[in-house]
Length: 265
Image 1 (tube, rainbow, N blue to C red):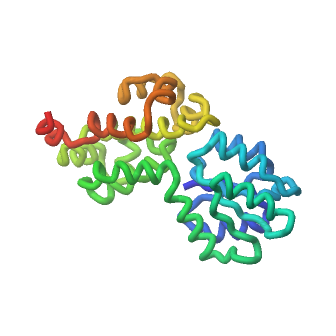
Image 2: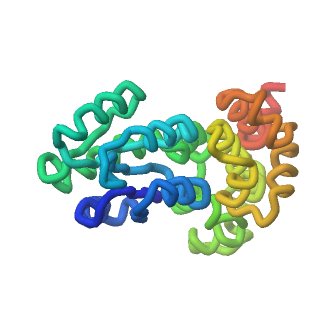
Image 3: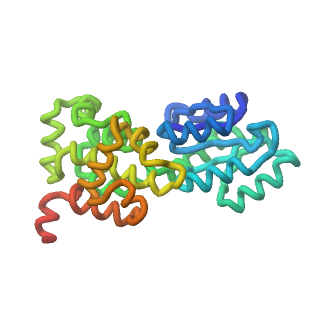
């Protein structure tokens, strides 16, 4: 899971140590870099300091909340009279988790807050919703597919799944067949479309941003997958389809075991 850290060096190093191997942490130093990073990289959580520019400000963070409402934001700043009003304003925007440098930023506290925010990330919510579809698969394959959902730009083919699960492609496909699921290719494509739908609910992402973030070489491939798995273009699914309805469509058509679908019909 990638964490974008818009914080000074001292806080970044503490954050990186606390994150350990569970999170990858990338530092940025300007608010412009924050926007670029969120749009172009698979950022699942942003840790931001209202003092990043040298002045206590809430405007840039409030803008992030408007553009990317699904992105969890965590404040990591210095508690001073300058930041008090800013923290109050951001709390009214729904940003609830704050850690204060040299006060409560012990590694265990940082890990705790990162974990709490990770539970709200798009990939975690998608994993939770697809848990029933993944449950019958062997644990080694399930772990790889969960990683594919967290980093959809890195795991895109059945061959890549098989390599990471340390089996050959045919064995990988047999596992899916054995539990009555469609092919792993369909699973990967359908999951990427669901992830794309989640991102497109945020006004700060363009369709091109989402296609790039999910590893599509061309935006038209995302459009083709959106039509195949949801029956809509990317623009249409952004405007007219809620998250629960999108999930229900994909699960029913592609991720429900074949025998369950047959008995339901």
